[in-house]
Image (cartoon, rainbow, N blue to C red; front, top):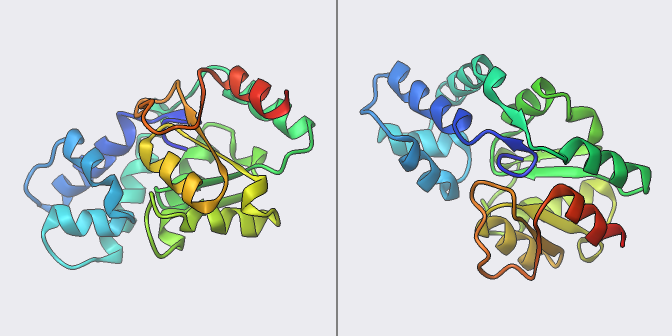
Length: 200
């Protein structure tokens, strides 16, 4: 979601930074937040930032702060058209994000994309964070599709690893802010390119 469907590059890290500030923690930088994405769920990330045990109330505050900043989230150019084309072709569309399910609902709802997806799976709903395949496997299960019949599109190397290890086709979103060519088997340079690759 973040970086693939929407440009939330400044918004999500800023929400964590502000949450830590409101909680009275030591200042963290947006760069440090991005480094901690691999930790997993927002409450797990916040526990690291706050140097204390996990607290649901910390995650609840993060969601509140995130919702306050959604005006700055932008849908990547070409994404609405690509989703419409994939939907029209009969593909079942789902989202697995390392962000939490509530955060995904907040962001996708704010930018008008939520109705495009049959299922949304958050990082807080699976045992292991990306690059573990848990979230991709759960999304496939909820969609009723075998993982090997799925493409998992994401802009980070963590996404590529998760898709590959789930047995899905990992497609690197070349327009995303965390994109690295790396080990990607397939790269889509634009959302339109993605449609061509999946439907061509």
